[in-house]
Image 1: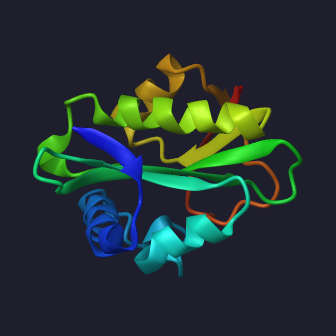
Image 2: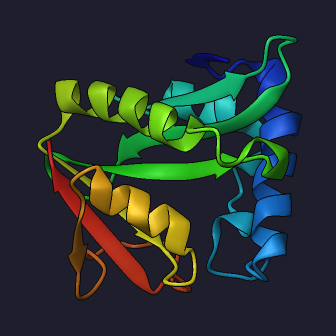
Length: 158
């Protein structure tokens, strides 16, 4: 497996991974990443934002297996958001999410003091990973959240 920054050619694959993952959990609804306007052009979106990156993980043949992003969070000084962490169903359970998160958090430490993320309580496996990596659960979202459907929020000191 190889982790690298997203390229334009990866946009359709990661969009499909994100949409299929959300559909699996019944989260293909407004207020989730499913309807983010930049979903089909993540390479451009992250390239244009300051202190932002999106990484994909590929198999030995170069097939995109998943991805994760870091971007500034709203108007909060020194706070980034871990975004769009998704893995293909046939690649889950291989430790790819942890590897992607470690890559993203290493980058985030260079630019931010805190990392925030929004998720759903029913995504238990992901939530356990966040907690193992030092994220602390919050009672409510930070001001400026764009995904109103989310019901679980975490923050980590970097």
